[in-house]
Length: 110
Image 1 (cartoon, helix red, strand yellow):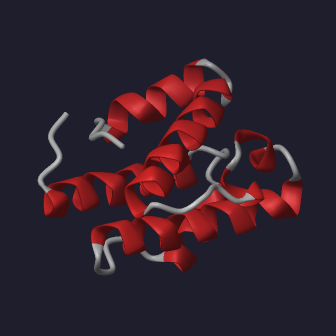
Image 2 (tube, rainbow, N blue to C red):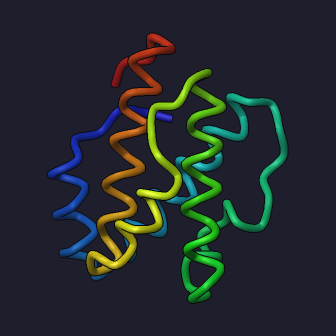
Image 3 (tube, rainbow, N blue to C red):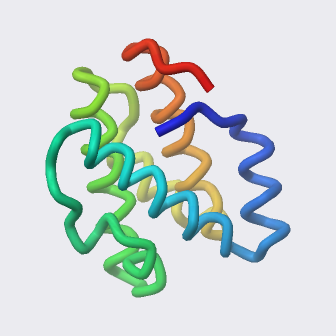
């Protein structure tokens, strides 16, 4: 897991038509799983974001995992899936904000 600028990420996801979002989603969930010492579930894989309903479940569960990683609530899981409607970018940018706050709490720098 690493800190990343939210605006830059928003542009990268938009410019690559969502491909970077899939890469980011897989990398972030792998980092959270290793940080928690648990195995990855199907909703934490990149391909879960391609399946319509499963993708919303995936971002919701990712927010819960980020909160567990931080040790406190740094991001709202419900708000994460509500942001999903923003051209498929809003959820990733919102999750990155939670990752940044979790990294601050755990003392992880860029």
